[in-house]
Image 1 (cartoon, rainbow, N blue to C red):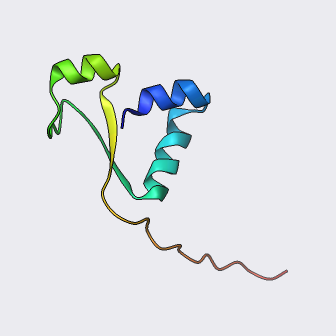
Image 2: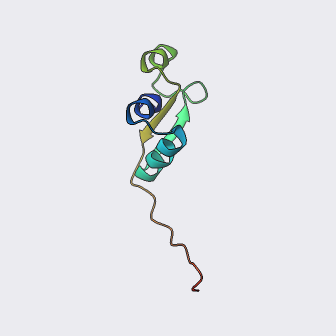
Length: 69
């Protein structure tokens, strides 16, 4: 899934979109560093070098303990 297109379409920051996709269970990487079934021509076609792939269920929620006031 190309990240840049979604960032532009939803008008959110890339950092926010990255956190959202990680929460859904996606693995994120840049195409030139870890090319898996994607070529440079696909990067140009998708208009991005950052992609996300769903790799499994989301991580379980980590409980944060807060102090009582």
